[in-house]
Image (cartoon, helix red, strand yellow):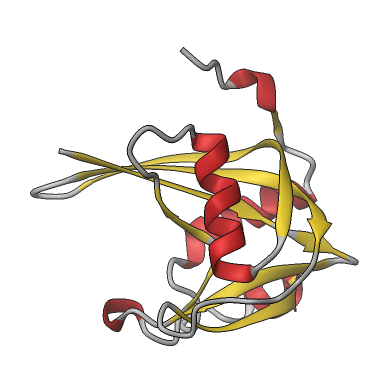
Length: 143
């Protein structure tokens, strides 16, 4: 069995929008807006949907920041993090899934090792955007 996680880094005026998780296993941890890909959904549509569900914001997918692979005893996770362009900022979210949505500077995030859900995943994705190491969206071929 395999699980695909998709999400997007949203940047505005040098700050990055993160969500604070409400799920018990990671309650209170900050994360990039991301989640499971639905059946019959493209990774682009899934990333835009997850961003919208978790933040209320509309985004356009602009590039690929990071592709990850984690193998666990009983599952395999593939993660794809996209760069985005913020089209419409309306902060709305389901309080059963998300506790808060907040903008952070990169420097603030670097000092939040214990507060971030997956420090390396988040910092590596944002660093790729800051350092302009964004792969062209055409890298992803729809089959």
